[in-house]
Length: 288
Ligand code: ADP
Ligand code: MG
Image (tube, rainbow, N blue to C red; front, side, top):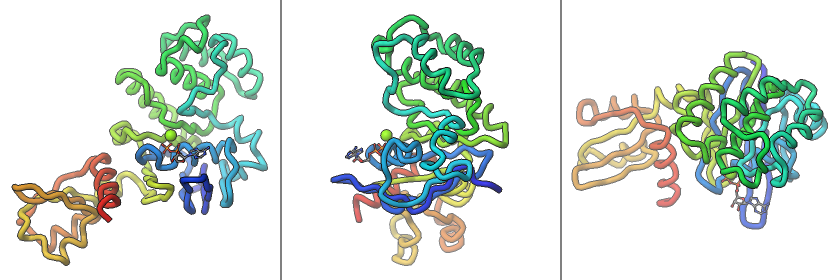
């Protein structure tokens, strides 16, 4: 299976932050959720893919092509949405469309106008009078209207109301039915991903904690509850993190089979949400 995106040993140093050897890949035909708390390095990674920032070292390939050597071709084939507004605030949606249209080989005017209509956006109002959600919808309308093979979106659901959020998730599920496409979607709202993501890449403090198929996470991780007495040292080390209360404990394990075999009927094991998983990893960092 060909990878639509490949990142190897990517490094970027800022004064107070660095991306440390970031590596992950996305096979063609799938949606990857790129998760992590604020300040984890999601936007930095995405800006490096789009060559809006200069990397210190490492390799980025999109469609098998080096992202810098083939920048123009790659950008033509990517639909991107950033978490900041990149449009001129003094222009209207119609004026912006006129500027953007000739930049793309496969611009689809009908599709653009349809999204503008579906999203209820005004064509003749200046962007500076748009709400955050409206700016996001305009970015999405552009990103979805030039037959892009890959969508790269930085926090596309932030600022959107629940109805439009769910519409966007439906649009993405529809787009990915085409096996040649790929979606990289960053968010700190993990519930968006539970339905649609095929892969989850988790970044914290500039480091990738894991990058795996969502089903593997969902099938293997477990939220374990029980009495404190059963937590022997050898059992404790199976946990990503443990939270205690007066009733007992609750903790996250990577492999629920191990803990099930060791403790049998003394515990309750439930399916964790992606949020549970993210929180336990982050709490462990704070305690370490
Ligand atoms: P995220 O998108 O996951 O919230 P970012 O990638 O935007 O995180 O930021 C990661 C860290 O890098 C933050 O601490 C941020 O302050 C820092 N940072 C981002 N851009 C710059 C920059 N141009 N110069 C210096 N520091 C930066
Ligand atoms: Mg960001």
